[in-house]
Length: 257
Image (cartoon, rainbow, N blue to C red; front, side, top):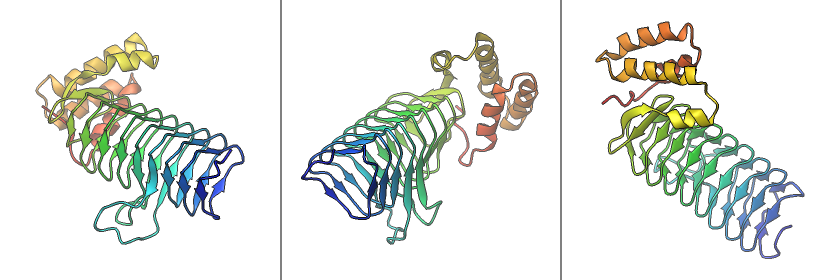
């Protein structure tokens, strides 16, 4: 299950079912869960926890220290859930003491080739990052968010649940939940209708979310007035609460134009 050319630190804990390919290095304080597979020519450094049934493809580096110049080798961590796929050349860095000290990834996520996840990022479940997406430090992705290829995301930005960002976009402010955004800089376009259909949102839910989008972006309301109307709408439609929370919880401000 472990190739003879792989180098495994004596402190690493690998479930007996884990497979490790040739010329891979697994460092100190790494824990890898049941059923996970690590391909050839990978580097996994700790402290890192990788959950069950994860797949790490060749040339990926998981759990490396951040290049952030403020980092001075303090003990920080990377925590990864179950059923994640890291395709070729993915890089994921541990946290920094200037933030939460832990980069955290949920479960059932897909990181396509050459994606970068910076220090202290928090990624939920069922997210997709297409080839060459780059997340700066402190970025948050909520459940079911998708980012198109070659997109860059600025520090401290948040992508709300079920949001979608188009290919080669520039994200410098938060993308609210359910919103489809595109461009350089990214601008709101519509509700992510196709994504919601695929996740079994009802026609009624999609219709009310489209109504909410118009309140937020098409009625020439300031943000405070739009939030008042959204909260009224949320009384009868609980799905609106996710949108309200992502707007009210924004630290950088949401994309508006």
